[in-house]
Length: 60
Image 1 (spheres, rainbow, N blue to C red):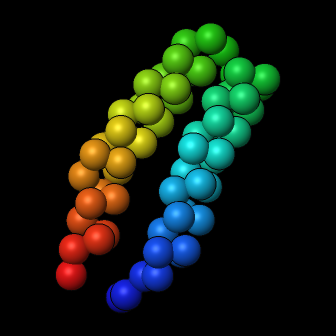
Image 2: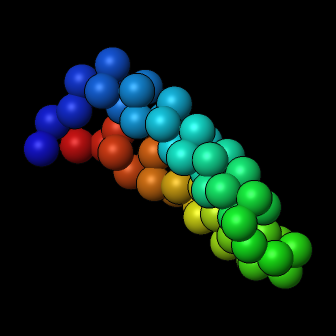
């Protein structure tokens, strides 16, 4: 599937926003350890996406 650069840019904007919303919701309704887990796992996944996944989407 061919993605236009604007679609990819929109996706790159939504990922950090969803990550921040997940942290805020977990901090509001969960415990401190749950917030730490969400922040750690989300940060690692975002890092992997921007390190490898975003590059793979440009190839083709």
